[in-house]
Length: 296
Image (cartoon, rainbow, N blue to C red; front, side):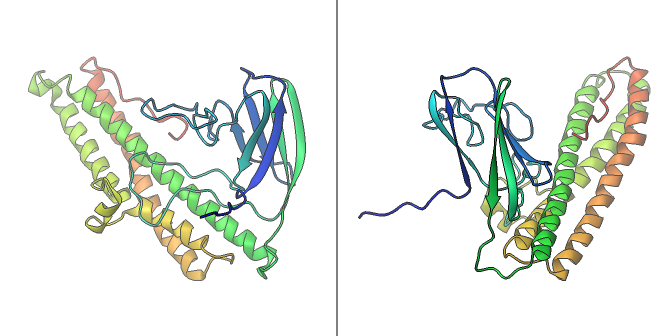
């Protein structure tokens, strides 16, 4: 049966290279004010992390390590901007039900795309046109956009906190294994502090993310936790082209309050208990737990 193919969803950007290049190519989308919306690269993802290639999978037909990578081939190249702002922080291995980390869609208006190859650059204008069938006001669409950004920012906070919890637990476990054979009286303070830190952080981690779920259907047996509740709220707000409802705003405020309480406890563990633990293991001539850097 012959079937048609829908046009690609997003802004199609075409560029011609005189030859295949080893130089990094970047594409920056800016809004009408000139503020950066998102930057794509041939070498890094939009968060600035180098692309990693999974050796167990083949690259796509364009030999890209990721759909977000710009191609660098001789002749005509094409890149599709999906009209979205950057995603919220992902949590590898986390199973989500009815929620994700996608960034909000860009609002109707004027934008620009600037491509750089080495020292050469070129800029073209872009215009996003509102669906003519919509009667939603610009103010309501802006309110929806702002709410999704706020929700994603909280999701990012929570996911970074979970990553930090796991880093601390790994470091504490590594240190405690090194003094397991030391004299009990000498190592007792450090062992007790290690247990308090590990137990406290594990308790918080289990409230922030469902650690038992390994596949989507597992969430039928194990309830979703706070990160999933927050992330799924973004999908609810984005489900129609309208301003967020008061119920969504109220739910966000409640979930955010819960998240902030857990984040405050993590900060207390780092400022108080980790400091005490580092003092205790310093007496044992062992390396300290590294401080948090850049909120990661």
